[in-house]
Length: 112
Image (spheres, rainbow, N blue to C red):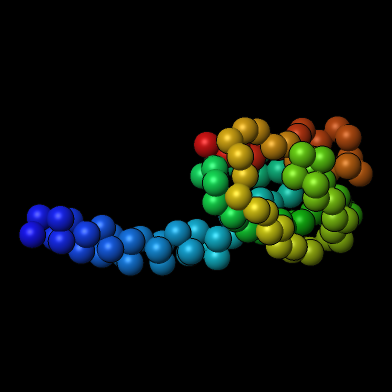
């Protein structure tokens, strides 16, 4: 009887938790470029879960969101917003930068 109750409890927990895990990928994290800098400069995200990052170019210049470690690169015109979909990341740090402006500090995405 205890085994059956435990099995039902585990099944119920799985049903309740699955929508939360699926939702994690559908809610984008926002990175904004303005005043010649990224905001926030550092993001911490859960490792092992796919995610979407929304990148907004709120500046008056063309920029390039680039990350060698994430294998992503896209030029963005002033006012443009892009969606960057990422697979589940392994724990670690992944830099991003504006390749058109080398003086802009690099940002980082930290998967934990």
